[in-house]
Length: 158
Image 1: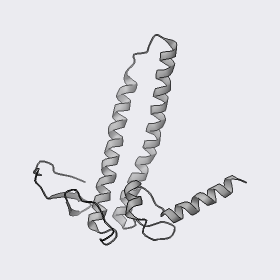
Image 2 (image 1 turned 30 degrees about the vertical axis):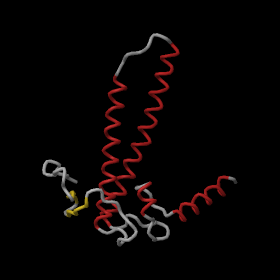
Image 3 (image 1 turned 135 degrees about the horizontal axis):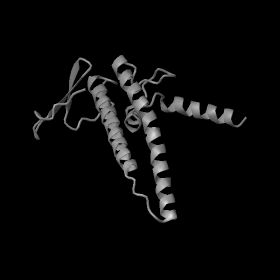
Image 4 (image 1 turned 180 degrees about the vertical axis):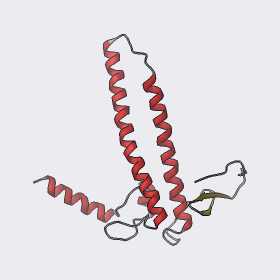
């Protein structure tokens, strides 16, 4: 996906996003609404952009983590050193979770490309814009997620 920021003026009404042989103009400050056809071209590009921005942010944070871990200054005090090591371990666990999240983001972008994004993988029904905005990588509607969680709880109690 390419976004040409050089040609966008501050008063621009639209932003053009290109990707996968298509270009859709999104109005400035566009937000999907239930008044529109579900998963129309604007909504797909909105979520594609949201997912790509999220992915870029994760990569940026990962680079910062690498820079922080390369800082070899170790405090002399043993308790300060232990605190620093605990913080580094927590940061590495967080980055590992985000590494897995990148895979989910890529899968969501693939679903946008193949036309299945926004639809529950269990029921086939639309997931809902509010849920997709809150968790753009979700594959289950609220109802299907609740059923899944109840099933997990029943099986974990055994």
